[in-house]
Length: 168
Image (cartoon, rainbow, N blue to C red):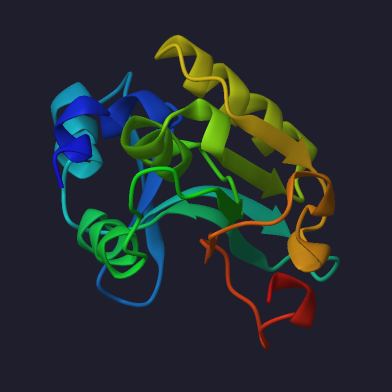
């Protein structure tokens, strides 16, 4: 898909990302301390954790990530996004997949929702840096985003236990 060459993944990543350590955990990779290692991670075909949440018991769990590029590409190819396809993305995250959608379809056909307000704000900034301005809405994606409906495609870039009927 030619949009991958038009949207640089590194522009959508924070200065610190976490990569799998091979033992079930993660190790931080900091752009300032290891620019080459960070850039290598940015363009590896691996998921990168971009944010953790700390539970009340002190346990840290990933709460946002940059999916591995091959998975992103597969999602976009499977969606069969033809010209003019109005698309709803559930889970904006960093905005990288949103930018790929904009590069493919145009800003006006892309609506993305994100439950985490700081992530949504950061995604808007990341997208604006490449002159993309899709609708990025801070809301729970469980209900979709009816104000811009109907959609030709709904893509979930977050995990869900069941597909909400509102997405149908």
